[in-house]
Length: 185
Image (cartoon, rainbow, N blue to C red; front, side, top):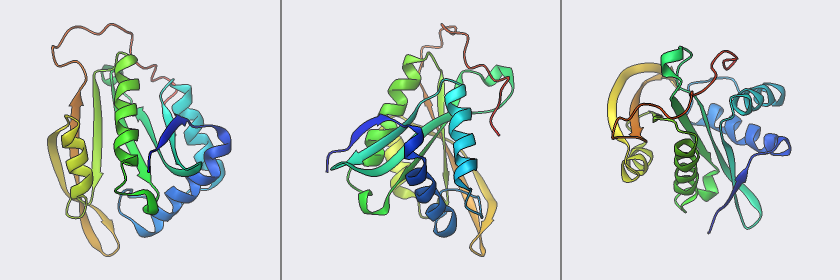
């Protein structure tokens, strides 16, 4: 399986919404408990694109295999150089390099934008060893763990925060950063 990556388009939103909905209903990568509608996912897509941030789709053999996007890390102006990365991969495509390809592309795009940090919030630390290992293999370091902060599927879940410093030399920003006035819904 060799994933082909491209910018997400509005016509990808049905597949994106379906994949995310399955994760909401059966997984722990998100703490949402009710799948968002196509209209809601369209609003989220527009908000990410409105910030000029990447939203990518992976295809394998011409079929949708997953997606990734960057969103503002926090709404306060001092955070405008950081984003949170989110990645979702179809179950049949997991373990075949799709997540790695998406994360590498997200890193490259964020670095090109002059951003400073990418934060990964890996839910359910107990069963997400592969995601944590993927982040570590690409230079992310553990920044902390929120212990038992989510209640889903009748159990408490941790969130491991992973952080990648895109400009470890610490130079001042070379861009104005994200415009956070619009915010995400």
